[in-house]
Length: 131
Image (cartoon, rainbow, N blue to C red; front, side):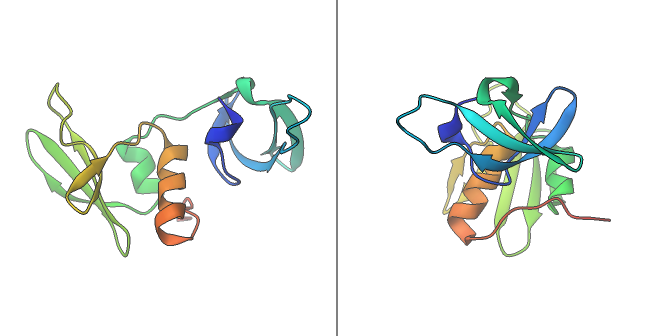
């Protein structure tokens, strides 16, 4: 992963854990790509290349509070109140897939991309809902 793709609180995979980013190295003089993550109760620095993005799935959308609102043979739509819609295109072409924004699809392959998009559009963090 590249540090430039990340924001605080992005969820990523480190080893076998899903971890949030809690700090970023912003020193341009030192060509370091250190990211601070929280693993359990510990905050640890890791090289950004040790982190892996997490594929965006319907399970993750549900964890973020999206609700399935439409299903057909070709598409599944999820809605998040006060935010918008996310479609999964089940066809091989994947033309109608992504976050629907003013009639255009913005494709997010990974959950950190959706978290970043949500923050840009709302100014709020997209968080996992607790049950």
